[in-house]
Image (cartoon, rainbow, N blue to C red; front, top):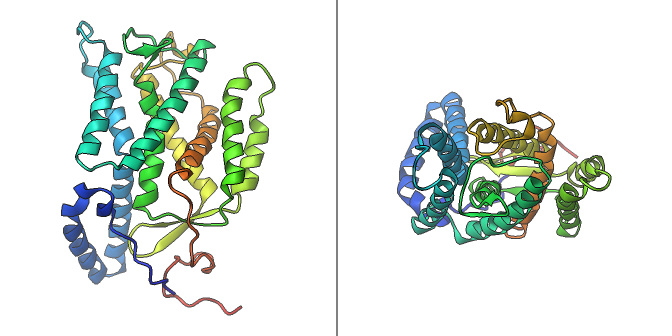
Length: 311
């Protein structure tokens, strides 16, 4: 059964979308009236559009990485890295000014910028990767735009949370997730000097989030997915973006100095753990809300009118 709760339009958070609401509603009504096939196609398309909107900040950064690699003049008075830094700042300002990003999302980006920059300074210092080009806007050899690349992950999580009206079943409390995120972050530094606790952290993550289900609303009803699966899928896309970054020679791993090669699949584990840190940081702003209809039958879309089995 339905809860009767109506999700506010995303235009409430992003006024830029207000002009599209009426058009989208008409398209949805036509798709629903045309039958189950067009309705499914419309929901699938709507899922892709929402994901694209959630990736706005990261997508623009990726476009900049590729574009500057292909077209930025080598003899420009402003170095490529400094151009990327200024462009990232301008994108941030424009998104806020146009109502395409909320101030809450900007707070997440700022927090993650600091967290990411601190990790970059350490990792480049121990030789994990390098930034091969010159720049003026940098700290300890780390170009300032790198913090925005980390922040784009937090921006995505915050935006997708609102766009898909996230609700949760069996979500672990902050009192447990925050120490886990802290331990993961510390291990990114400490494993260079002491034992790598990655295996333990994977197990702890599985124990904490193994039973957690995220309910996300694409169109009319909430769908469901194990939250751990969501973490894996996002980590995969971050790994693909990392391949774009190294292929465009924004940064390089030691084995890529002589010529580019794909980033090792082993990095997926690192991105998965970093996803946990990102996610927990976002929960400091967006607190997980329970799904009232979380006891719907397995395989049944949450919020549907299909009858439930007798208990």
